[in-house]
Image (cartoon, rainbow, N blue to C red; front, side, top):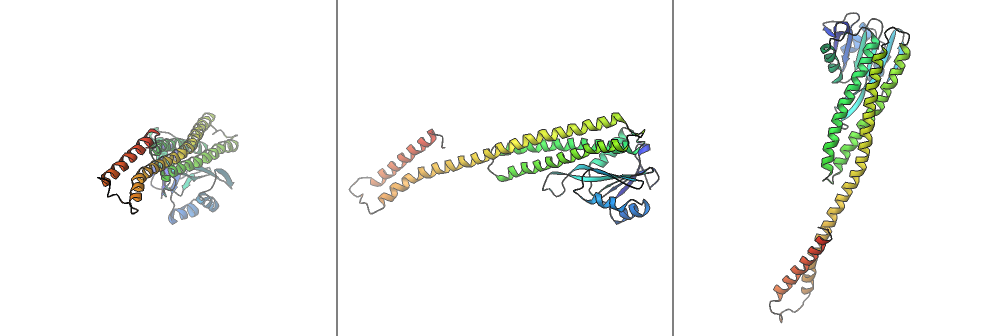
Length: 306
């Protein structure tokens, strides 16, 4: 699926491609691929590089084209890990900019809607790339808040749980934080590379660069804080889960000992013991068993085994 937007008119959508417009391609099909290769004449290697889910943030030149690859966060459609990061490619020359992403994201529609709401006009490619990086940092922060809420929910479950599933959920969230950490560092390095590429350009907006760097550092610091908290929490609750299991086993052992007393007495008197001379022998045996069991129960209760 592709859309044609005009950055100089607050990202107004156009019915067809025109020079100096932004071509946004998400989950490209065969028709989109033919359009990019045959009509726009994009380098085929660039498109294949973007398709690699493990591609790191970087820049590359080929002729008049500049490829900028960023890592952006998305909800994991497979669900094994709640949030992951994926590459998005920004391919531009003097006349156009093309973004290619092989997944549907919440970032790009929000980026367009925000620009329209602010009536923002983007006059050059560097400004466009920097604002895209800034938007990615904002979405990192949004997903970090959701991760924090998931951690708080898992914490409440772990306080009374002995299941491994709850700890595994924390491990999945920890993986998401690792993905966020490496992607944010890569995007921050990209800022330095872009400054070198456009250092002699009149399009370099120092204030915008500083704002983007601040957003990235804030997201990066938040990731590190959440990661440290989560690691400590996993260690603590691993011990809590083990302790909960020990408490249950202790209670079951106490219960088994308490029930073993009448069983032991009944076993002794079941070995051909003549109890006929004793009046109410059966009732006395039951009473003795009950008293001994009650004494054992009270003792275990005193030492907090129950």
